[in-house]
Length: 186
Image 1: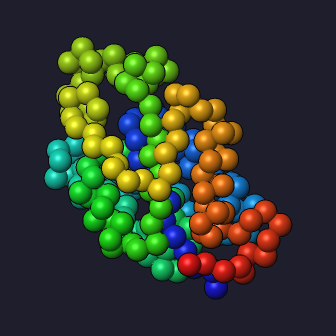
Image 2: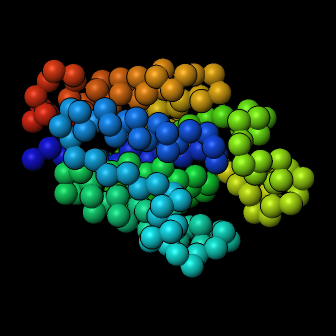
């Protein structure tokens, strides 16, 4: 059985984590891998209902996502987390718990996010109308040593996807296109 791993997307709201996670999942499934996506919004609805947006509740939510990723990973699944996960300490905790962990930082400036924000959430947060908005009135701690950095402000989706897949192939996490799925892994 192929070894599982967790691909952990982090970045501000609207940076493109879910979009890229879905593109990566599709590409990995096409290579015969079992993939599950844990999207931040879906997890809040199904696994973390009742949690608010205090630091403690956010930490609990991200630890729950990490726990599910750990279970999937140890059962040979590629678990993809697409949640803001604003605090470095909790991402590092999940990295340590899961082991087979690849962090993807989806970088984008507040200015660009505000421009592309169809719901107008950044504008409201910047005007003080939304409290505890990550990156505006609540902290977001960018990763210090992510395995992969993509810049959704400057890179196209296909370029970001290619950068992620190239890294995963090069480092032996996934088989190269045309390679047998039963390949090797570190």
